[in-house]
Image (cartoon, rainbow, N blue to C red; front, top):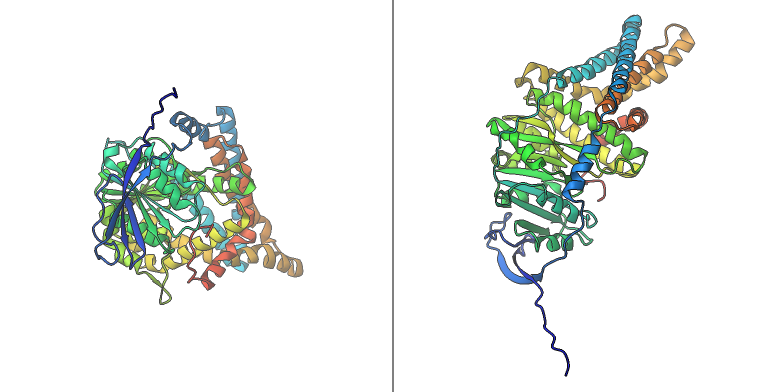
Length: 495
């Protein structure tokens, strides 16, 4: 007699597919209400249903491992070493100030270089002083409904982990939804999203048949999302436990329209380039954004991990979508422009308590493309923001106007200080400005790289000097290339 066998039914999940053939958009929903009309043309969507097998659980670091990783990111050195680091940094800064005073005569025959060096030095030092007054938004137990937006293109290797880390971050399930947008990927990104959806009823998957660009991916997420707060997370960003709760606390103030979280570089130890970016990221967040946050004027909410009050985004959404550059539609994934549209009428804050890591470019080609895109974003915004920034508090307004013109003339200053001045000194005699200029650059770099070491304990602080030298030699000149290619439409570093 043959043994009896029993067939066990595989767990199935019912997915609703809502499609607009005209716009080439499909919205896949599991446990959330399906949309009725297309977010673009407002025509009724065609709905079908299918049963999908429950996907296998994804492998990603446990919450204990994530917390351990978070603790390792900020292991400060022993007190004696921290004191030594601070002392050396201050001595170097004092030396730079002394050399500036000693070479006061240079203001007469090299006024541009001398004045620029003075303004740049005062600007950086003021950032540290103001950042020392920074206080993170207090935790008041605020738990609004949240829609997390994850735009994605060709990220099949990381998108599943990104999604899982969001749902595992500890925000209440009944107040959380995640909207993932597949922006015309040509790899298995959509399949990874749909597999994750079978395990998470609050995950909405939007599929663009053709690539539309990051700005449209964000826009459709805002239109479909139902949360009071919209949290933007890059497809290769991994948030830590409790970070969403901490990110939304700033919105207890009704005058706040957006809040930036803090991102470190996930792949910092891959090579010299990623270490360099990790040092630079820390300075841009913990010093620059912290100083701006004191007056509520953070100038850019980075797309890797930031939050917006949804009603504020809806208020400026049409203007943002229809932004033009030199007569052509030119807003292609510009987080800076969205930030500034909201900053006109609201405060923008930064919280160093909401932590995440993001994958930075690990090749110089990718990095160069990213920096070119960021330079275009900067150039597109300076004229528009300059029209109203003066209405803000005088201190951040003055700082912004100083920062507005500095990157544009910096390549000229570098050439004047390190090429023209030495040649002139050699031919006609007199003081060589190059030494004083280089001493100032090295002193400022040493201050912010040592600050990184003292605060984090990461020993590759020296990689910050690589950033300084590569910026002076090459990347500072990208501002002119960005100006020549201002209509560039590509977003991201991989597309």
